[in-house]
Amino acid sequence: MKALTQQIKELTARSGFELVGIAPARQPEKSEFLDEWLARQYHGTMTWMQARQAMRKNIKLLFPQVKSVICVGHNYYSSACRNSNKNPAGISCYARGKDYHMVIKKKLKILFKEIKKLYPAINGRICVDSAPLMEKIWAESAGLGWQGKHTNLISRDLGSWFFLAEIIVDIELVSDSPVRDHCGNCNACLKACPTGALVQPYLLDASRCISYLTIESRVDRFPESLAKKINTWIFGCDICQQVCPWNKFSKPGGETDYQPASHPKYSNLVDLLNLKEAEFTQIFRNSPLKRTGYKNFMRNVRNAAENSRV
View 1 (tube, helix red, strand yellow):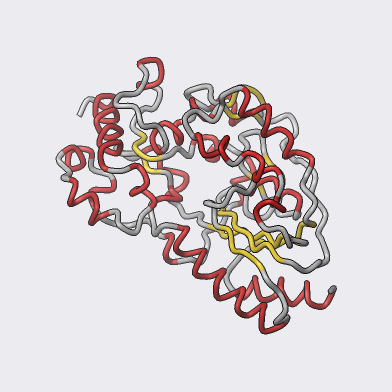
View 2 (spheres, helix red, strand yellow):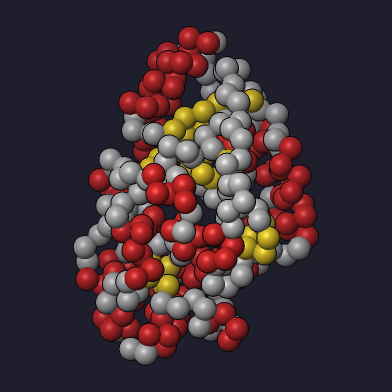
């Protein structure tokens, strides 16, 4: 399968993915950390993580025929990534363009059709974030990078500004080797996190993370102890990635769909305070921002306005 593996990697690169690696279907050892993380309630109200815990730890429950995991990385970096927290309304830079689920799923469907032309007997499943799969651990096993102290995957070539996705297949391809951790003694991400969500290196309490609070949390009002620390973020947070030394080497990606939208209501808090639900649905229909829903999005906007005294 050596020749086929190389052909698949070449096809993947031509499809626009900057990173590709192959992991064997045996579950990586780090998957055992999931039990402890869930036991500490660090997943907050993301109950789906606990509900499909066994499947996350055992990929064969997701796809019994799996023999290899093709892991890919897609660069979304733009100049907006370094300045997203300086906007009046902070939106994580990954969410300022078109929803990556749409972009990557379309690319992977086309890629898998091309792979099937090379090897018609292959069967597989495309996974873009929503499947119960421990993406960062699989990507680490496939050699795409290492899981940094902020728990994001870091590549020596791209930094951490990239999306992950997978094609899990029923043929045994030639596997890649994991790369070693290059975080060293750096603790910049832990020191920079405003809410203390990084409780120790490599351990995230998602229930305190600004990304969780502004996207997944369904409370009507943020806890007083965290509300001000969220500052003016209204969707996600980029701080731990902005301070990471490895992101000094990041270069803009070539995917035009990830370019920041120019609509004024992406950054004007005064306009956002007057946003109607129909406008929200229309403006953000192809954006990751729709995930919050109108009610929680407006909660985020009001909190940002209070913190900025708009």
